[in-house]
Image (cartoon, rainbow, N blue to C red; front, top):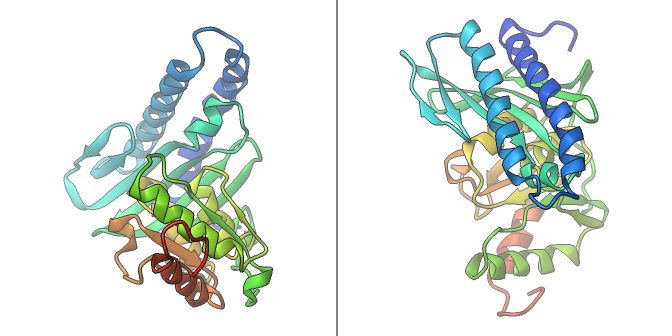
Length: 273
């Protein structure tokens, strides 16, 4: 993206400044795996520190805007239309276990709708950025979703529910139905990167339930600007508020939705209808 807007420049600078601390902390958390205390408290501090750095940088540039924060909750600004939507460490569990797959996600919401996003993976140094009407980019390379239209060639991503009971049963039915029809399903544990990878054509699609605004705000803009389609898993359109999101290229979005709908009617304990 040779000529980023002033808005994206601010977002990128904030992400990169916070990323320097996260990378240093990640090097330390790998060593903490062998300690009796463990790394959980350390990671929580790293998360909060990254959020603080991001907020400080963004507030300098847009002092009237509010914040929707994973750690800090909602912080209102005098401008009631604009909000920064921030996950300072998407993929916390990966980080906690020393797995190098996590990202900083910074989105912008205007009157309740995502309009800009940056997802930065500091370990791989991959910077995904998009702004409404301006395209999606990985560094300077324009992104387009995959052109594959055959389900048996599709590589998909998903997320596994953290809690048991009904949600796990529903997910098991969905996974059992989908995985018999596609080339593969991945669960890498960072929704912002999953959406960025759909935008980059690395995945043909992604679905997950129960996500929050900070998980998906930036990724939604990336997918939209890369030519992908978004909806709710159950067919609705309010995916940003419900957090039940289905993202895919145009050729497979409908087919993937149909597979997930079929899973909802599968008999208990069945992998496919």
